[in-house]
Every structure is written in structure tokens, then in C-alpha cells.
View 1 (tube, rainbow over the protein chains, first blue to last red):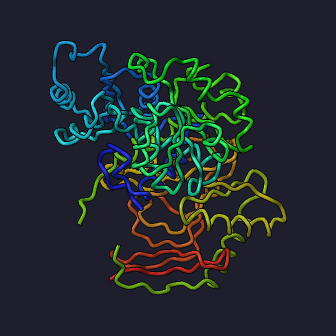
View 2 (tube, rainbow over the protein chains, first blue to last red):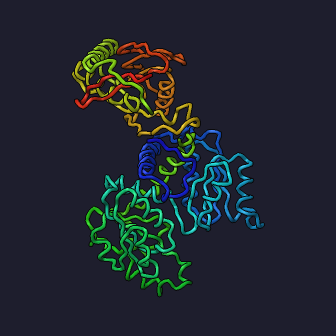
View 3 (cartoon, rainbow over the protein chains, first blue to last red):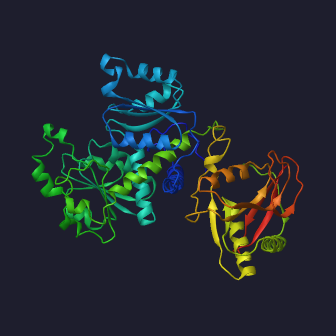
Amino acid sequence: MTWNRKHLLDIQSLQPEDIQLVLDTAEAFKEFGERKIRKANILLGKTVVNLFIEPSTRTRISFELAAQRLSADTINFSTETSSFRKGETLKDTARNLEALHADILIVRHRSAGAPHFLSRVLSSSVINAGDGAHEHPTQALLDLFTMREKLGRIQGLQVTILGDILFSRVARSLIWALNKMGARVTLCGPPTLVPRQLEALGCRVTHDLPEAIAQADVVNLLRIQHERQQRKMFPNLGEYSKLFGLTIDRLNQMKPAALIMHPGPMNRGVEIDTEAAESERSVILDQVTNGLAVRMAVLYLVSGGVVPLQ
Amino acid sequence: MIVASSRVLVDSRTIRDDLARMAREIAGDLPGPEDVLVVGIHHQGVRIGAQLQRALETIWGAEIAGGTLDIGLHRDDLDQKPVPRLRPTMLPLTIRDQTVILVDDVIHTGRTIRAALDSLHDFGRPRRVLLAALFDRGQRCLPIAPDYVGRQIDLKGEERIRVVALENPGCFEARIDGA
């Protein structure tokens, strides 16, 4: 199995073998990250641009460190400092970056499909770091990597995704990735954030938290996005946390080996309480470490040559 | 890849004898099992290395350390074709002052060994590195020579030798692919 893609735009268009290859490659980079000297030359002389047209700290830092460990030159380009404020279009900004010979463009944008658009108009490789409510492929890949590392497999796992799912690109990528790899997905949260229509993605929807977590091997919590509160998706944070927050008592109702995951940043006291977040079943910090390995793997894979399909 | 033909070039009994002879040669040249580390190069060198390690342990009557080395990050052709599969490198905490016996199944151009030496030196400074290859098919492009060779083989340019692990653990045969 070889990787023969120039871009990583979404999970939906990947084959299970592609996902497998990313996870296997990330395993090698996880080992690499534990070495005394964590530097390889494979992107030496190449330029990686972080084009973040939406605020992000952890994803950007993770990509930046991944690129630096592979010896790339990195440029950070974010909304606060860019000419977007002066009205430049996405295409013009990206073309300018390309004129500086950017080899890999890591794109976060508030519009779904922005990375796909850029991949059509530019000659650089494009990696999607989150586009609107569409996808966040590297987050899903690092979640799968963490599940496989801790539980030994993905096939057959029962995974519950809990919280703000309707507008979540993290959830969408994760659902597709888990379905492709043979896990069973349950979605849970208030009906406004987890409508029945999401079952069309190939998962089960329930609004009953105790039932959703009782048989789960993994409970993946999503951040409650305060900004959504203005749209009155649920009455108030206190009620949300009472009905859907993962407390230590609820955690104790779960299977003994079940994992707690969260893509961060956490709202302690809303979707998760401090005791649950810091319990030994929480692998939230492992996710951060693994994110670096997965992003190095993705940079490595897209940096290779591509053979035209016959 | 379409393989036009494939036939057994060297059978498993011969390979077993070759490996045993290489182990005797190595044991004859080294003072003993102390500070010896057998490192197989991914992918097939790992399995050959494990066999060689066992053979040396039998001769010396003592355990020696083993490891695996992935060379993908040091290849010189990364942007020319789809990148090679990477695998974790497993080495002891330190290789400083160790005698490393680097093991691969086939030595050809020498590029793999060049990359392996660079990979190894990311982990420290071994006292000495020796190279053992089950097959030497010549046609070197770099000034690199193995210290221990199972068997020399002459192949035409387009022919490829492939060492295959058989079902019986520790048994290998060499097949030749080519037009």
C-alpha cells in the first residue's frame, strides 16, 4: 500500500487503506518523537505555510512543530495579521504565497470547501486543518490513532460522540473515519445539537446520556461552543451540564476500560467536570502528543511524488 | 507490480547454513557477546537479523541485544516517487560504545546502507559498525562493502532478488523476479 495523493482535503474521500497507512506511518513518527534528537531532513528546503483564516492555537502549533521537526521552513499567516483585513480574496492571498514557492499549504477557513477550492487553483499540496462545519481530517486521524494505541483496534469499537455535533467538523470527520474502519458510532446531546437527521451519516442518535455511555468503549466529548448560545440552541450552560455533562459519577457508570477523549479546548464544568477530565481514563493529553505524530505523518505522505493513476 | 516470472534461487536449507556460517565468522572476529548489538534494517533485514542474533546467542551461550532500524527518513529519493512505508525504529536506550552488527537481506547499490548509517547516528556514536548481508548482488554505487556475506549472486540489471519468510518461523528462501 502506498500513498498516492497530493492533498489531504477530507476523510470522506479516503479509502480505509489510506487511513490505515496514515495511522501506521504515525506510529513511526510517535517513536521518532520519543528520541533524544527529534529532527529529520525530509522537508529540508521546503516551505510550509499555515494559512489560518480562522483563529486556532493548538492545531496551528501542532502543524508548525510537525513541519519544523521535519526541517521545513514555516510561515504563519493568520487573520489578525493578514491583508484579509484589507479585502484581499482567498485566491489572491494563496497565489501570493505560492509565488513564494510554498510547497505545502495548511488551510483553516470558516467556509466549507475552501481547501478543496485552493487545491484546484494552486500547484502546492493542500492540507485541510478545518473548513467551516465540514471536516477536520487530522483531528479524526489523531483520535483514531489514540483509540488504536490504547485499545489495540478500531474495528468493532463502540464510540459515543457527545455534545455539540450539528455544526462540528470534528464530529463529521470522526464519524466518517470510524465508519470506514468498522467502528459503531452513537451520537448524543440535546435534540437541537444532535438532530435525528444525523443518522443519515451512518450512526445512531440518542438523547439519553446514561444509555449512550453505558456500553461505549470510547466517549468523545465535543466542546460546547459558547458563541452558539446566542442562537439559543439550549436554555443555559447549567442545564446542559446537568443533562449532558460528563461527571465523575457518570464516568463510573461506564465500562472500566472505556476512554474519555476531547479535542480541546475543554470547558471544565460544562461538558466535563475536572475530576473526569483528570481521571486515568482521560487520554486528552495523549491526543495532543499523538496529533503531532499524525500531522508529521500527513506532511511526510503528501510530500512524496505522485504516480498518475492508470 | 506485475511479476513476469518468479522462481526459487536459493532454498531455505542453504540460507540456514549460510546464516550459521556468518554467525560463526562474526563470533570468531569479536572478543565476545559484551556490548554487541544486532540491528536489522526494515523490512526483511529485521527477520534475518533476529535469526543471526539467535545464532550468535547459541554460539556464545549468552543473550545479546537486538534492535530494528527504519531508514525511510534518510532516503535520497523522497520527492521522486510515493514515499516509502515507515516503521518504528527500536533500539536500546544507548548505542554509545556498542559494536553494532547491521543486518540486511540484500546489498545492491549501497544506498540503503548509507541511509542506515545516517539513521543509526541519530541515536549516538557506536564504537564500531559491521555490516552483514545475506546476499550481495554487486553493482554498488557507493563506496560501501559488507563485512559478512551469505552468498554472492550475479543478476542481470532487470532481475530482482526477493527474500521471502516461509511459514516455518526462521526459515527463508530467495526468489528471483524478472523478465
